Amino acid sequence: MIAFEELKLTQLIKLAEDFLIKHHQSFLQNDPVEILQMTYSHKIFNNIQELCLEEIYLKPDILFNSVKLVNLPATLLGIILKQNDLTLNEIEIWENLVKWGLAQEKILNEDVSKWNQENFNIFERILHKFIPLIRFYDISSGDYFNKVRPYEQIYLKN
Image 1 (cartoon, rainbow, N blue to C red):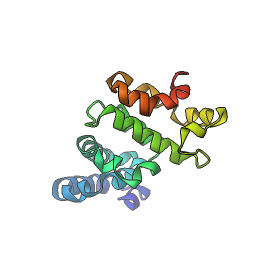
Image 2 (image 1 turned 120 degrees about the horizontal axis):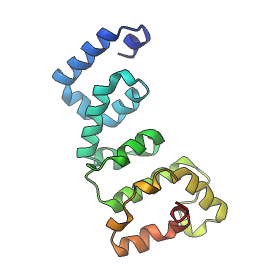
Image 3 (image 1 turned 135 degrees about the vertical axis):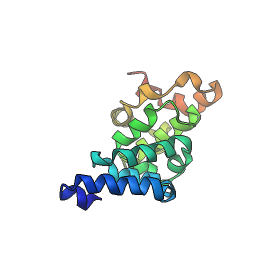
């Protein structure tokens, strides 16, 4: 399908996309994260992208319990986190966002208690656009105190 796009064979792309969706939906649902990443830079594959996103919204563990999470481009992560239909507890979203953010900058120690101001600044730049997407009010006070509060410096700026 990517070759069809490069050759500007739009009609064939739509036919192939429709065929995959109608007859091989299980293939698309088998690894929606990988397929989403492959098709994301090709806007013409909109229907396949939507199908993959729907699968991730319904079964977020496909992404959030996967090693593929840390390699997800920020734009895709933003699309997924903006979705209100994401069936995941807010604290799990926060924990995965932290995991993703840490993977984006290798110099950050996973132990936030060892961070200096520069580490907090780096992490804040990485997560800046995602902080407003977190519903902190849906996180229990215990989880907030133990899992969110250590990062307070990065989200108080927003």
